[in-house]
Image (cartoon, rainbow, N blue to C red; front, side, top):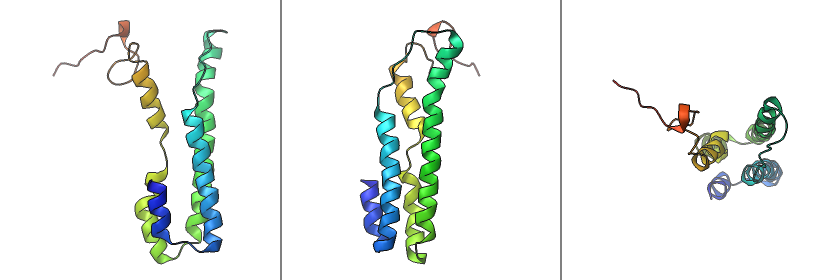
Length: 129
């Protein structure tokens, strides 16, 4: 929805449209990856299992770098009015890795405390003031 609003507000010409499509293709690839369920491996030692959990985040960071590059390519060909629109609306179109991490944390809440970090005994601890 935000992409549609931004696209309409930008009023792109043909040359800009090609760069817009490259940007949205990169976004769609990341969103598809974020929605794909990840298999949690119970095989291997602890270090291999840790690496298995980190590898998808590295891939997502690489995808975000590609999104950034595509956004830069698009932004450089926008006129002053379009840049003003992009300045306001473009950043909100980029999903954050934290969005996915929050979803995973809520699914694994039996192991996590309120801050998302591991807590002793699976129980959240409160600070006293």
